[in-house]
Structures are given as C-alpha cells and as structure tokens.
Amino acid sequence: MAANSAAVTGLFGRLRPSSIRRIRRVKSLHLLIVIAAILVAPAEAARIKEVASVAGVRSNPLTGYGLVVGLDGTGDQTTQAPFTGQSLTAMLQQFGVLLPQGVTMQPRNIAAVLVTAQLPAFAQPGQQMDINVSSIGNAKSLRGGTLIATPLRGADGQIYAIAQGNLVISGAGAAANGSKVQINHLSAGRIPAGATVERSVPTPLAAGDSIQLDLNSSDFATARAVAQAINKAKGPGLAQALDGRVVRVRAPATPDERVAFLADIENLNIDPATPAARVVINARTGSVVMNQAVTLSPCAVAHGNLSVTINTTPTVSQPNALSGGQTTVTQKSEIAIRQEPGSLIQLPASARLADVVKALSALGATPQDLLAILQAMKSAGALNAELEVI
Image (cartoon, rainbow, N blue to C red; front, side):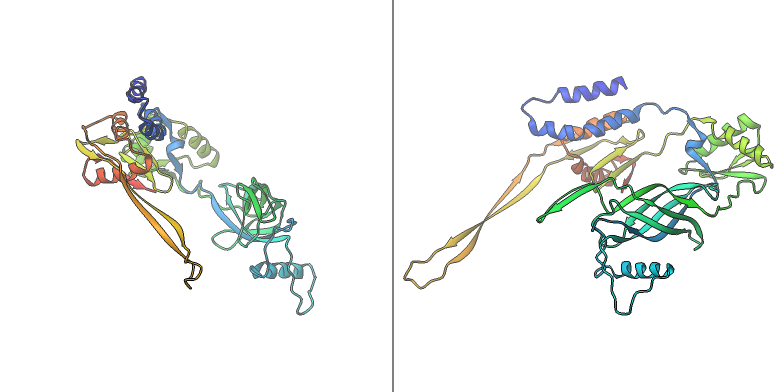
C-alpha cells in the first residue's frame, strides 16, 4: 500500500502548476486511483456465510395494489387516471356506500399505488416487515398519506401479508405561481414495519440427509476451499464440491442439530481465490472499476479530443422606409472546429494494478474518455481482463 501511495504521489508531483487542464483530468481519476490502491491490498480470509448461501433459504417478493389517502391535494387526477376512481368506488362498496348513477368523483387527496415487499425466510404469521409504496398514477406527492389495508400476494397469487400505515417520504417540495422547488423524490415512500405476515412459506431446510451451499459467484477454487474448510472442521468426506457453484454437505437429521451444524460451518474462514480479471464500466455515470487481477500487454495509445462549436446569431434586415420591402430575420452561423493535441504514449506491459492506473492516468483522459480507451485496448488484445458494461 505504501508503494502505491508513493506512485500516486509521484504522479501528481510531476504535474506543472500551469497545466490546469491536466490537473482537472487527473483529479477526475482520483477516485479510480484510490479504488485501485485499495484493491491491490492482499485479500484477507472470508467466512463461508459471505461467499455462499444455503439453498432454499431465500426471501420471496410480494406485490399489492392499494390506495393512499389523506393527501393534501397532491393526489391523482382521476380524469387522467380513471383506475383511481374505480378503485375508490369498489372500496366504498365494500363498506356499503353506493354512489348514485351518473355521479363521478374527482378527489385530489387519493392516489393509486403499488406496494412491494420482501418476505424473509422463516417469517411466521404475526411478524412485521418493511414495505415500499410507489405511485402509479399522476400524483404530485405522497407526502402525508396513509396506505389503507392492502393484501400482498406472492407469485402463486396467494396472500402472504397485509400492508397498512403512514408513509415516510424523504423528499419535500413547494410550488407557487409557476415556480417549483423539489428535494428528492416525492412519488415513492416507505413504511417501516408496515406489513404483517399472514402466511409462512415452507423452507426445505430439514428435508433430506444433506444441505446444499450455493456460492454467490461461480468459482471452482472457492468451491474447493469451502469443501476443504468444512471437511477439516467437521470430518473428512462431509462436504463435496459438485461444480463451481454448488457444494453438497451431509448434515444431521434433527432440526436443532442441523441448525447448530450450519451455525458452525457458516463461520468457518476460507482464503478466497483471486477473482478473474474484470473491468466494470458504467456507461451512464462514467464510473470505471477494475480488480487487482487486471494487467496490460505492451501497446501504444494516442488520445485527443475533437470538438465542433456552432454559434447562431439572429440578424434583422430592415428595408428603407419607402422601398416597400419587409423586415426579415436571418440567421448568421459561425462554425469552429477545435482539436486538442494528443500524443502517442507507449504503455509497457504491467502485472500490477497500480501500474495500470498510473499508465491510464498518464493519458490525461477523463473517466468518460476511459470508456472508449478501455474498449479499444480490449479489442486490440492489450487489456488482459473481461470488460463488462452495465
């Protein structure tokens, strides 16, 4: 880590004070350099619970359709969202309230929403869980609203929970005379402990004479390390790696012994294998992250920016008073093309991530420029890593 810090310090130390543009570009890569320095540090031991999960022990998504009431005039406009009025009419009928024929309600304090939640594993009836509430109409804000009783259904169509409560909205906003100020998002909120579990989902934890551990990412070395750690702690032959993702373990038959067995093995330490070299690029934000296995082959890179600027200025042509002509407006355009110089830089082969980051930052490229540079280096065979764009 000290060598990496010295490399980064040396990189910034060589910059001249007059190179303002270069300084800005290097600063834009500061986060990438910091991440690289962290990733170069040797990996420490991880517990099995961090790299694997027990098959069948999982959460289940729940979804429901409901109404939020009590809004301060920021609800759905029922003329543009007719399903809100239909839902309100159906709800009132359940309470014995029948509207006269031809009467159409146009309330502004109600909004149609979708309610989502994750039913945790081993959840039992009567327990509570958090829910998310999102507007599906044209409501301006859900702030101050109350969700009325909403059944939450699973993928099989069965009701597993009932949601109800007051929304917590993290945003705020105000509007007057055509001006509007808004902070964060107002069309979605959360209700802590807003749903009560009504039905549990069976978990096949005690079925069979063995359990299955599923690795979070497929890796044969990690699967072997998990199996070896379990066999070393609990006895030879108990765990068997079936492939790069699945490890099968023979476990006690009684539930209490099986729970104690899982509690022991999930806290066993393993030495995770070095992951495959990968560079992850977020094309929307310009983020570039690479792991410690990324290396470079010898290559040469030329980088420069080409910008085209078009300025259009309206000009008025005014005829003489007695000429009989008409006043016309013409457009005068000025086009300027500017290309920043880009030098050809030779990048030597490198087996250290710090050297890779140092070589890329020497190009003076911004993170957005790195998206194109890394893809070109991958196509040329100079980037020894898998390139993933998200």
